[in-house]
Structures are given as C-alpha cells and as structure tokens.
Amino acid sequence: MKKPLILFLLIFSTLFLFSHEIPQPVKNLKPIKTIKGKLPTSTRPVPDYEFLIEPTDLMTTYYDYMPGSYNGIPVQIQPPISQPNGYEAGGVYTVYHARQTTNSNKRLYFSYIDADGNLIETSPISHDIWAGYGSIDIDPVTADAFVVWHQSDGESY
Image (cartoon, rainbow, N blue to C red; front, top):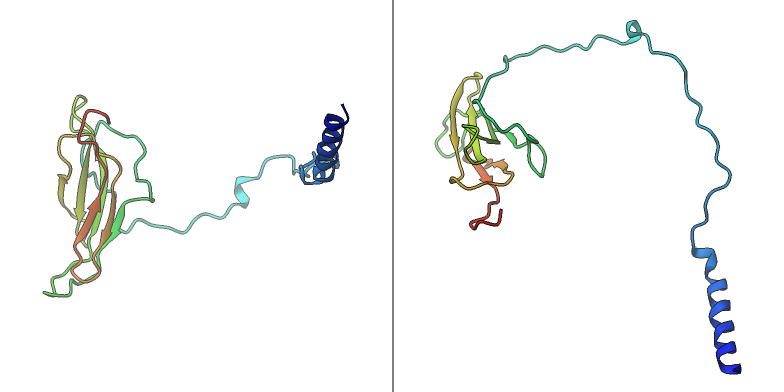
C-alpha cells in the first residue's frame, strides 16, 4: 500500500511542479475602443487610376471557380526582347482553368497577349483529363513560358 501511495504522491508533485507551463485563461480582459458611426464618403480620396489597356475577353468558359493557382495568380510578363534572336516580346502569358461546354472536362488553358494588348492565342494545354491548378514562369533569356500543373492519369481524380 505504501508503494502505490508514494508513486501517486510523486506523480502528483511532478505535475504540480510543471503546472505553470500550462496556459491559463486571461482574466483581465479590456474592451476595445471603437468609433461609433459611419465614415462619411466625402472624406475618402478618389483613387487616381486609369486603364491603359481595356479589359479583353480571353474565352467563354463554364468553369468559374477559384481563378489562380496554389502559388498566386498565374500571370507573367515577358522581358521586352528575347535574347538569342532579338525578337520583340513584352507580352503577357496567363494560365487558367476553363470548360468550353457545360459537359466537358476542366482543362488548363493558356493565353498570350502581346505588348499592344491584342489577344494572340488561347489554347488548351492539358489533355482531356481533369487538370489541377497551373503555375507559370518566364525564361529570362528566351522569354518563353514554362507551365506546370498536376493531373491524375487514372480515374481517381
């Protein structure tokens, strides 16, 4: 009987020694001061902006869910000139999901818009398999785009 009692007291005292490391609830809560009322719209400055290039329709899609990708917005701007051949570049590449019809699979598409704002090309990248989110980067020397995405080759996607 002594052995279990001593063991119990030893465990209890050990727990008591380390109990200060257990977070305790804060008792001294203070209310946050808030300003009541409405901010008048006349005190807000009008933003100074303008569209240099009008918005462009890339394609009609029936899949408008979470534009972008895991690592941000997949839009990249080319350098003004590609280096090995000196071709003019300066366009914008973008990668996105789309469905051409309501019954088709979600596929990965890319679009290229030149430096003047003209839509040059919109094409599917992935096969007719449900593709995952894509990311894009530009080769600084050749100004070519690199696109990566994930997809399941089986029926498990």
